[in-house]
Image 1 (cartoon, rainbow, N blue to C red):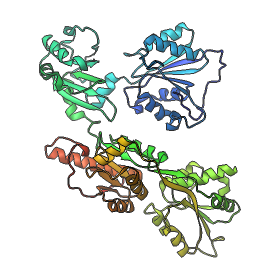
Image 2: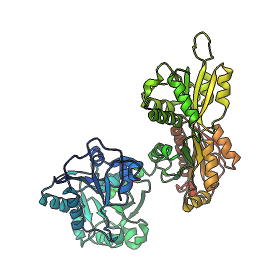
Image 3: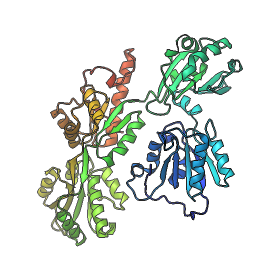
Length: 555
C-alpha cells in the first residue's frame, strides 16, 4: 500500500540514476514505544518503508501519524509489504532482498523494518549481504530483542547475582538438550508447538522436574499473557501451556521472581478493552493515556466536526476582529481555536492580528492549543475548567477602563447559552458565532456495535454529554457490566438519563484526570479481588456487581 505524510525534514534529493541507501531497522518485540530514537528518526526520513509484519502498520502510524498511514497528507513515504508478494504467498529471504535492492537502485532512501533486532534471529544479515553486493550503502539500526524484552515485561530477570549464565535456544531444528542441562536459565524461541517434548527431553537430560517455566505470548503489548508452570506439569500435559505463538519461554529458577517483579500485567486496567468515543482528532491522546495504564483502547468516533453551514457570520466576525471591533475573544474548546486558526489562514492572517485583543481560554488544553499558535491566554479559570468557571473569573465591564464592550465568542452550534447570558449580566455584548458544527458520526461496524451491547468492552470513557447521546444513538447502550466513566457532572447526568450507572467521575473536567480515575477504579477493584482470594478478572469476564460512583483524584 502507499501512505502519505507531511514532508520529513530531511527527505532524499538524490537523482533517480544515483543509488539510494538502505537502513535495516529493528522494530523491537511489538510495542511501538520500544523503538529506539535512531529508529524513529530513520523512519521519519524514509522514501520507502518495507514492512515485514502486520503490526508494522501501527508502528508506522505511531511514528508518522495516522494521517500518513491513511494517505490523508500530500507527501510521505511509500509503504511496501515485504511479508507477502502480489500472489499472496510469503516472500523468501532472497525475494525480500531483491525488493530492497530494487527500490534502493531507484535512488530512494529505503528503510527495511524487521521485527526485534535485524542481526539477531532475523534475515537482516542475508539481506544486508545482497545490498552490499549491489554496491549500495547501508546502516543497521539495532532493535530491542524479544529475547530480553519479553521476559522483562513478564517480570522475569534472565540473570541475577546467583544465576549468571543464560542460553538462548531456537527450537526449530533438532536440539541436543544435554548441552543445556546445567545452564541456569534457558530462553526458548519457536518452542510453543513442541514444549511437551522439550520438557521431557530436559528432564531426561537432568533438569529437575520442579524447574519453573514461564510462557509469555504477544509480549510487551497490552494483549500480553504469561502462564507459569513446571517442566513436570508441561511434560505430563502440554496443554498446561495454554499459550499461542508468538511466545517466549523461560526455564529456570528466575521465573519464581515474577511473583515480586511482575510490573506490566499488574497495571490497574491491564488488558481492559476500553471504548474511547470522541472525535477522530481528539481520541489519539486519550488512547495513549489508556495504554499507559495497560488498557487496550478502541476509538469509535461519535462526533464529526464540520464547518458551519453558513460561513458568513464567521467571516464577518473575523473581519471585525482585525478592524478592532472586540475587546475580548473567548475560546471554549480546542475545536474553536482550530476553527478560528483555519479561517485566519484562509484570509492570509496570522497571530499578529490579535494584537491589542484580550484572549480568554476555558481551560489548560485550550490554552495550550493557543500557545501552539503563538498566543497567550490573558484569562483562564482559576477554579473549575468550564464555561461556568470562566464566567466566575470574568471581569465586569467598566466603561472607563474598557474602551470596547464587545466579546467575540466562536463556539459550536450546540453550545449552551449560559456563558452568553452571564457575560451580558456583567455588562458585555456578545457576538455568539457558530465557528463549527458537531454532527453525529456514522455508526461503527456491526462487530463493534455488538461488542458494546453484549459487554465485550470493559469500560467506556465519556468526555461530554454529546458523546453519550451520540454513542447510544449510533451503536446502542453499553452493557450493564461495562464500567462507565464520565468527565463531569453534566456528562454523568446525561449518562444516567440514558439508563447508565456511572462508576467513575473525574474530579475535574480533564481527560487525563478521567483516565486516572478509571485507573484508580481498576486498582481498587484488583486489590479487592486479591484480598478476597479471587482470580483477577476483567469486568467483561464476570457478571456485573453492585457499583458505586467514585471520585477520581486529581494528579
